[in-house]
Image 1 (cartoon, rainbow, N blue to C red):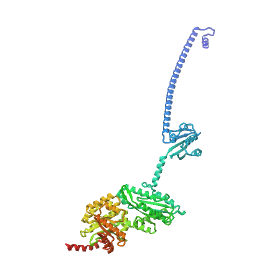
Image 2: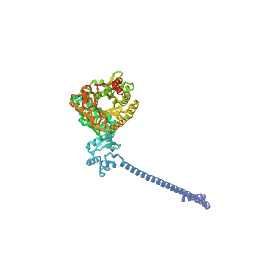
Image 3: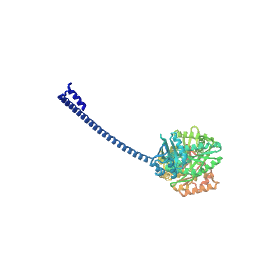
Image 4: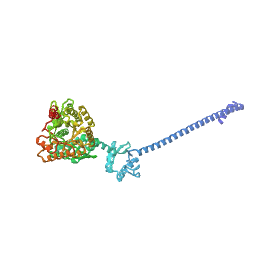
Length: 636
């Protein structure tokens, strides 16, 4: 300040050294005013600075509040995430473990604790892998070599490879263990209880290779085992393949219903299991078809013994909900001894042998023979031709008279089907009827026989009957009663002149249903006969269940007359039984006068056989009625 005054004083001093006080006052006033202005500017600057500092401070406070709020929100979010992570980890279906690079536990969820029954006091963050495994071994949830397990695991993890394995626990559970390496030398382990999945996969695999109904191996598994067994043939381990087809099963299945048919198949499967050794294989390869691999046979006799044992076991009666059911089995046999060592060739040979057994009357067994190949081709050609024969009009009926044993009067005729093949000539019913039954042609073919027989019989004398066989399949068929009514109406033939012949096999299956069908036919006036009496299991039982009009004694008993005492006793007993039940006794297969005299003496009322006439076409039957026509004309 003194410097400013000195400068102002110098300005107010004249050269002579005099001070101009007025000038000095002016200079001092001006200096004061300037100083005041400078002070005000300074105050203003300071005020602005204070305001700016205040504004900045308020901004900082707001930013701090925002940042603090964001941090709190982030902290809350992290806490919520941690809670969700903890909830997810502890509620996941898999057990989860996480280890750091020092092999110490970082994370362990509750699923792992519960899965292995462990203690949280031991299994907690910071415990080592070895401590954990030793704890599991001590509690009985682990039964492995710990050192070997850890060595193998760390070798795999150090290579950066995920380690996966299935571990069988002592309690039978299967655990899928997955160890996945992390970048910090740690790893994540998951344990998944795959017991049910493994069992389900095993069940699926089992079902894919086994029959669902009988639990026997199916065709695929059977072929695999056959190929495996044949690989040992060159070392001297010979084997046999047996193909089985159940005889009369279709009738039982159709009459009793499919549930009963399924139950029958299960019972058959059980019996077959008991017929073989544990080293053999029994399989179901089709609806009612089974196959067996008999291992380590020394000679064909070994297989023949097994086949007979199977036949006896299968043919024993079955009790299905009160129904007595009997089935039989045909068996085809092929041997690795000479029929081939290739699965397909051996199976084909066994299949052809089965056809041979069925062609020989069923209920038996046959070994493969080269000639069967030709017979198989014949059967297949026969099947093709049979499907066309009915449409082509190749069938015809022949008739064999039924004769009264006293006056030799024709009481009726038995209709017998004949097939005149355009190339092969006359084919025996014994050859084509089984094929017709097998391919389902027996129903339309039987309907044709019934209609034609009724039409032909309409031109015969009014007191003669027409006898027609019905197969078990026809009786079971739901429209048999309408078919009979239609055939009678089309021929204008009275129902009393139609005689339906059945074998007792019709009543062996679905007794109630088939008996009801026969009763409906009987109510129409149709007569019912039991054919081939005495050749089955329970003829007397069936006579009690259904009141037949006629019993036809099988030709096997008549052929033994008069020399065979047993045949005499049987014929006498049957004839007496028929008489007491008000039934007609008819002797089949009478070929000699001596046999005729015998059956008359033994009580038979009627006969059928070559003694009077072989089966003849319609044109040759008509003249046989002439004596009766003339006799009736004279009496009139």
